[in-house]
Image (cartoon, rainbow, N blue to C red; front, side, top):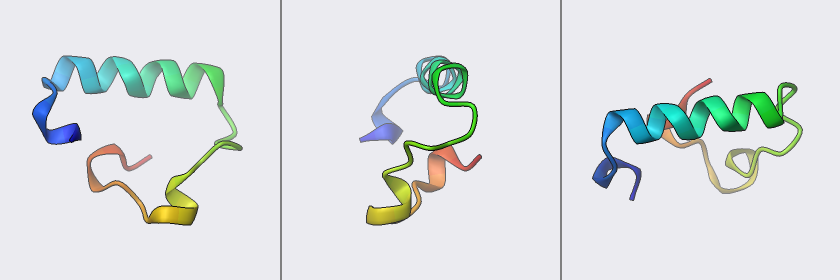
Length: 40
């Protein structure tokens, strides 16, 4: 699903996520497997 979004949109999503969760406390990737498109 991430691959369908333009790079700018994915970058904005990552920027917002990093701003709201700088310590990565909310990280569903730990449970369901890391998303290769959004590697921190």
